[in-house]
Length: 390
Ligand SMILES: Cc1ncc(COP(=O)(O)O)c(C=O)c1O
Image 1 (tube, rainbow, N blue to C red):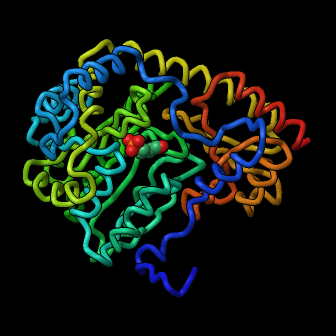
Image 2 (tube, protein in one colour; image 1 turned 180 degrees about the vertical axis):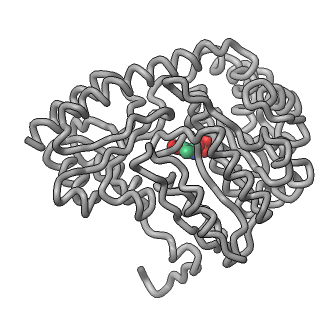
Image 3 (cartoon, rainbow, N blue to C red; image 1 turned 90 degrees about the horizontal axis):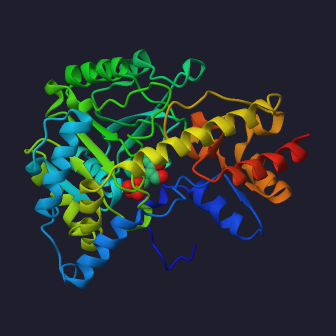
């Protein structure tokens, strides 16, 4: 980097994103089979797009809304939180955010001071680790128990707590492992948080995509956690609205003005046209959500079947949720250096995957595969992988 540019310590600390690096490399190669994107490939449902067009035509979208979002939308969100998450919510406890990501970033900013520690069960979504870094906090990575379907290691979390620990940040269903943390695990986590007065920041982006009888549980539904939980949600995954950039967070009323102090300088408010689209998403038929869930379940089963055919190269835990999975690489090279493994497979087999090391050091030796793609993409990718690996 040129001497003329002096970059802040906090930005300097952050390494290049392996996910974006793989996306960049993938674009240089023709006819790639993509298993690396964690974004829905279905289009946004028509009734949601129509509502956005109506809002534009009615001239409702040219200005800002309240920074916390349209009241009508927050009313609907509060109803949804009560109905689907069992959270005793009201609209004053909600901020509409620029996707879940901006809500998470604002929450982290509101909770931690420089040097404060945040416990992250890992492997986890790398953006969470970066959000702690950007807030000048210290990410403390506590490994999940892979042998037991990547469940939380409650004892290890207890041991990781120091006088500087301020928060625990997790996503369930998990990116990248697809684990759905059980109610029992999350109740144990809540007990730890209450004992040590920690804030639990949740990313519930994949809340509706759970399979095989797993149930999504929101830690904020535990009444004692009212002041200790900040829960982040999104329209991105549920309604295939990645580019609309709209999500929301829920926290106790006392938190809201404090989190808003970070939300406003980051965003002022969420995109207004997207807020109208989100309102239509919540008020309209929810059939699209169950259709996506069915589709992802079918794709998960196909991916697991294809992985079974490569059992000397990969070992995997069947994901109970999300549309992601995190097989362990059994080859010598891959088990030590997932980045080289993925780059080589991209170049030589034209299959784009994400190296596990992108999800914290505990992810090394794995690769993340996304099954929110059509069957043909999964089959093409695995046909190529089979040929390449054998
Ligand atoms: C766990 C998780 N949280 C958040 C996001 C991004 O959500 P949003 O688009 O709502 O900012 C993703 C996207 O891949 C994700 O996997």
